[in-house]
Amino acid sequence: MKKYVVTGGAGFIGSALVRALLARKDGAVEVIDNLLTGKKSNLAEVASRVVLHEIDIRDYTAIAGVIAGADTVFHLAAIPSVPRSITDPVPSHEVNIDGTFNVLRASAEGKARKLVYAASSAAYGDTDVLPKVETMPPNPKSPYAAQKLLGEYYCGVFSSCFGLDATSLRFFNVYGPRQDPDSPYSGVLSLFMRCLLERRPPTIHGDGEQTRDFTYVEDVVSLVIQASRAPGTAGKVYNAGNGGRYSLNRIWSILQGFEGVNIPPLYGPSRAGDVRDSQADTTTAVRELGHAPAFTIEDGLRRTLEWYRAAN
Ligand code: UD1
Image (tube, rainbow, N blue to C red; front, top):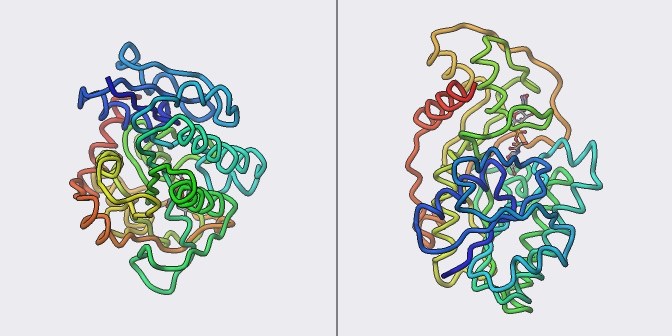
């Protein structure tokens, strides 16, 4: 029986990946998560089919035992926030850089067949041209972006120097069920969902005309699994986005339309380290990984909203 290890598997994206792997029924799934931002409840109905190791990727010895003998390691564990990496940079650095090094080292020494790394579109920073394509020079604007970029470089080096077949996917603003709206560092759409259901105005940082390639979690999960099986991708970096671009003002307007309400947002100062615009060129991921995003923004937003409504 193959073993799949998902670091960060109790998180929002990780738990969706765990469900998708279980649905394929071709391997055992083990999760490494320190429950800092992940939650046991994210795995509630699949808990009996998953081994959850409550350990921290900063602890090499602890994770090496779990990763040894894995077929595929999906490395999603991170402190995933741009502002948090500025207000509290040390843990963010230790988890995202030292922890990533530990996961790569454990995967190489444990002879994993494949590693897929959750990199970030934040690595691009602000570019003159959109959409953002993998051949553009990276230009990180925050510690988080720099950390995620270094993880890509390490995936490349582990592929060339240590024989680990590691592929990086640059996630673009993933949203969907189970994204946690309870932290000051929560992803913007989880906060929008909660505000909409509570009929409260969201706070928008800046003028709301910044854009993001909001990507539904199930599309990202499908791509992660495809990347784990595509040949010839060692050391490579691919965009994992939908290819669209929506301003925060536009998203809030779509959401209000769903509910037939009119709630003007509050506007505050722009956030340090924020990228202005983000949009993925998906050409290479489509060609080399078979990327085929299936959810329009309206579909994804509706499904997400219904999940939050039911969860409340
Ligand atoms: C997000 C992810 C990051 C990922 C990156 C890839 C989260 C928490 N962060 O970063 O892990 O690597 O995409 O592109 O999922 N905003 C508001 N009001 C709020 C909160 C945010 O206006 O209450 C704004 C922000 O200033 C920003 C935009 O919404 O302009 C998106 O912010 P956020 O959801 O934190 O994501 P990113 O910083 O883009």
